Image (cartoon, rainbow, N blue to C red; front, side, top):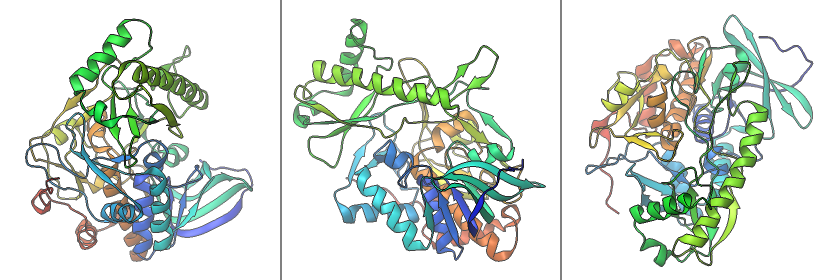
Length: 450
């Protein structure tokens, strides 16, 4: 499509990255470290996306199970090290056995992403929302972004769509699957944090008892708690816990047959409002029913609702459920994932399906190469995968691994004067290894016991 409204030039670079979440920020850092001129576009006033606006824990660095391995390194390690320089970082087991999580202070992470991005030479452009794409014969030539100064044009040789919602690819007319078209879509979650929690008393309540209390409260009819096995966890701040409890439907079938989700402005608005209303119900439950929360108070709501899936781009390969549960290795793997399939479907529970103990699936480079484009890569939760595979590989550490690969590939493509699809994968993998990425299970170090 061609966007015809007049727009002023604002950037002309080698690589343009759309979305500054764990995937996009990492992609921008990798591309700039690789010698490319980079602009990093995000609609929020800070970098980090879900990692700073919704959650406070990186999952996916470690595989679960008895033989835990560390399967993500590289820029991801730089992020964690920079967080540790600013304050405490907590490594803790996941409530449902998804592997050790790395819990941080989101306000610190905003600064870490900024320091690493600007320190690499990448140039962030905040408060900017993609509104159109100029495409010629499958090649993206420029983006149109809405800024406080009006519409602006960003030109680049290579683009990385790390928007989460595949905004660039959708505006360009490239193929994607909308969540909910084939398989049930994963639900939405509004996160919140509580202060003045008596952690010693809360720790005395095991998971099964916590869930029993939640189900019991919901069954009275006095609390609107659609999810009955949500979790809370400690944070680096004493007496403060963070939650993943609320559950809202992520798609709706309109009367005219349309399937709408969080990319629809009215649907998203309604979900944001409903999520905050629901969060207050869970707050009331915690204070009324859970030991340790008697004197606790709500201290913060997530800046935005947590979205797990909306659009998944069609790449040169689509990762599948069988690939994940079989811990399949790929010749063009650019990262690893050992996280289970974590399906937050509608209803009261969540379905977990695990890989072989200590195993990990490779993430093929081909899942980052957009099928219908010449010069666009994708990274993060809109990468090329089926619903089930996506429910495993969307963890934030894997988004960093994908981002590092996409950013590195973009820089190598520009330097070599070729399209990302034509890049020699062996060259990319060698560069990733040299930069600390972990590409094979045999190279994954055993996790240090904590």
